[in-house]
Image 1 (cartoon, rainbow, N blue to C red):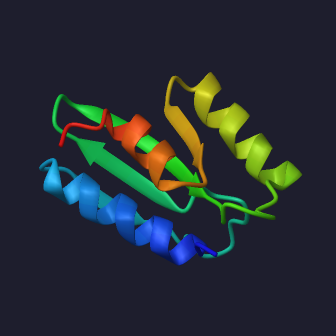
Image 2 (tube, rainbow, N blue to C red):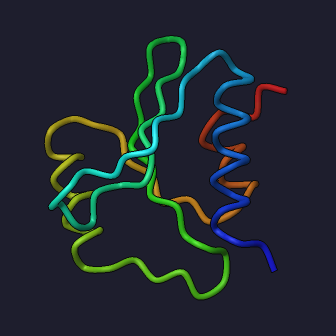
Length: 93
């Protein structure tokens, strides 16, 4: 079973391989904030919420953050698998 951590490591590695940065977000006092902020050449900035492939539940608060960020014109993605990471990053291997 693939764990959320391995997907997170893959996202970070692939983002950096493409010349981008992958910042872990952990703001004090704010719940539901996306796990990662990725910045790719281009420029492209994406907030990413990672979930484990099986059983990873997206909370109401995480949906609220997604809606709020999208309303502000930001890009936001929920990611559960390596295939989804590849799709997000454009699979530029």
